[in-house]
Image 1 (tube, one colour):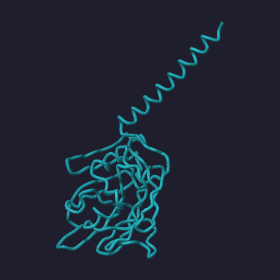
Image 2 (cartoon, rainbow, N blue to C red; image 1 turned 30 degrees about the horizontal axis):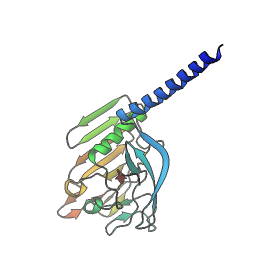
Image 3 (cartoon, rainbow, N blue to C red; image 1 turned 135 degrees about the vertical axis):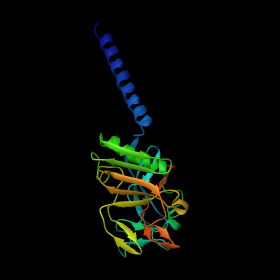
Image 4 (tube, helix red, strand yellow; image 1 turned 180 degrees about the horizontal axis):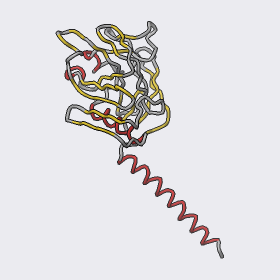
Amino acid sequence: MLIEPINEIRRAFVLMVTFLSLLNVWAQNENGNNLDQEKRFYKDERDGNVYETILLNDLRWFKGSLRYVSERSFFRNKDSVSNANFYAHLEAENVCPSGWRLPNFEEWKKYILFIEKHQNASKTKIKSTENSFRYRSKDIDFYSKDNPLDVQRIGRVEKGQLIMFSGSDYWVEGAKNELTHVHFLGPGFVNIHSHTEDVFEDNEVLRMFKVKCVCENDN
């Protein structure tokens, strides 16, 4: 009878599909491309603001930027809920909610390389050192709404004034002491580095940047 061979074929097919699915998950993890597409939300108990979060490489990120009003923060509108707030390096390290923190240098770099693979970019230029990372590509758009993170092009604060330009800046872990930050300077141009020039001089805060928060725990 043909029933038994057909059942064997079905079992073999199911095993093959299962194997390929597991292989795909393994490959994603090996390449740092593991993205949880499920939408989740986190409520900041300090002010009631709610943030959409995504899980990327076992690290949960705020999709948007922090909107918490701190003692020194700068916000675009008086209601403080539009887009993002800007923070000085002196408080950026501790401004995220309890259990959350600033992304570090390696985590931002992994995100940039994730977008490279996500958008199948091929023509890239990378200059990387222990403390800096510069990335250029004509095949990529870090501002695309299809990306996991919303990189908001709303400028930066310089000497207490909002300066509008088609870029975006975020503090990186180490901001308080090293003034580490990431610049999104164009659709395919990112620079992560540390410097005090034009940021903090003569005990005066010259520039304020936005903040994204991350956590290892599944908040």
